[in-house]
Length: 354
Image (cartoon, rainbow, N blue to C red; front, side):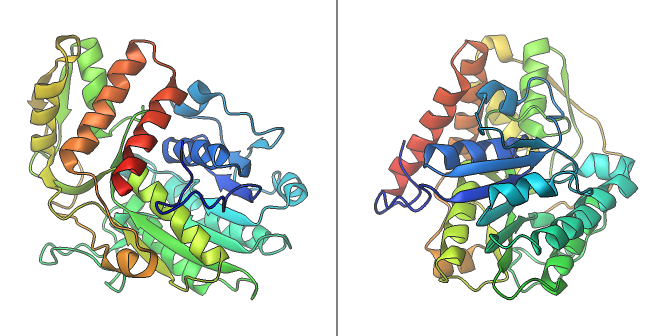
């Protein structure tokens, strides 16, 4: 598998000491696997996986004694992370689900906002830390159906607890009294899909579950448009951004990593296309179940700044993203090792970058 530069295997990550919070989650597992394959030394800080199966457990990544299971709101992890001496930090640990945010708003704010504040407070005291990339979401922007695509300078907001908590994280990062020799920034991506996500209330995992159990797929907002993108694309963006920060080539406070503009696809479009390409064993019946909570009908990201600042731009079409995702689950059910599936998808993506 290649390194993280589309022009050459420059070996930037080889030997780098990297802390990944939320490493047992969906995106965290992809990121940690990619970093390890690129030669980085990784320390993970997270709670146990919340799904079964989980991508982290299936990958069986060896972090050589630095797989730390602790809550970012506490301090039980500080001594071990200090001993690890991380240079670069990717902060992904969060309560990541919109529906859970409605059901448990206090937990959502406590984890996402207070947890991030506590993390930054402790990292500020660790001398080795030089770069911190805090991953948020496309939902940090103020809900305005008149704005077609959000750019980094648009007003922050959030009408649901999850979105508001992530917008609050953006404000926290922008205002935190971070040490002068630490670079800190945020990265905002869209609705990520891809193999290995078994979370509840996420469209692709819900489709797979309905197909495997031959049960009804409940569709809450069939006309909602989201910035659908394969998990590989924003993760590649995070890696490029962290690399640029470390090399003092990026002074941005926040960068969007969104999908192609033509990926303006409704939930209904994705469900219909999935049904068309899935094998018979994964077929499902769909049923409209109006959602209990308010969600934006239209949400897109403008990634022009990422292209200008980092040379990053999305390249996967929505059909490619769906095909990669669904094929991953089908092959997983057929016994293909998850590491092989992830490497195949990353290689496909890196080949397209050439």
